[in-house]
Length: 191
Image (cartoon, rainbow, N blue to C red; front, side, top):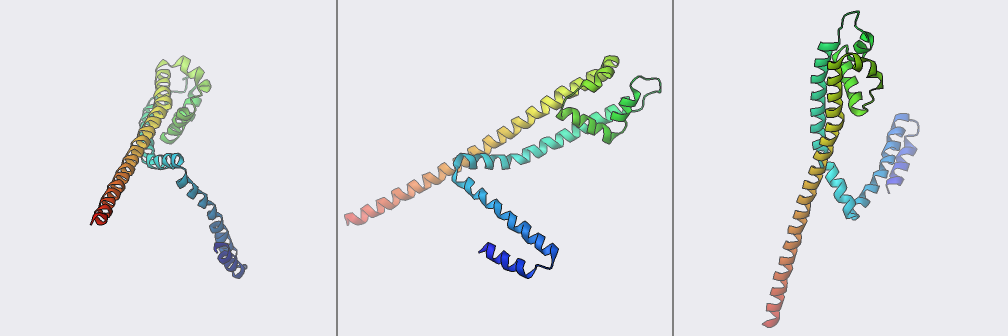
């Protein structure tokens, strides 16, 4: 039915290009019907439901990560963003940590992929910077990922337990209703 309606609408809107594209997109959205299969596979449904509910926790961890990036960026811009001309590796440090936005982006790259080879020369000459960057990589890359994983796992586990408890209460209510109905039927039969 949906295909037939779209076919009729597309046939009458053949001269309008934007309307045709809209209907093509709507037609492609039919692919989303495959998600109905998830309801019939209980473990997959529980996992998808828990993951959907864990998105809130992921949002809060992301906000925490942005706050940490912002604070660390301010520290780095103030300390290594504007160094004297004679400082070795000045161009590299100003290019990476010259302003807040660039510093946040560089720290985000270090958090996602802690590849420190471009920093080897700087880390050897500036021990304070090396300590800060290594601490950031350990906390940012490993700590935040562990925190995100732990929060999502705990959230999914808690929500799935609540859902299982609700299902147990529903089954118990159906069982009591069946017992009451059977009792009524037996009482009717006895009289």
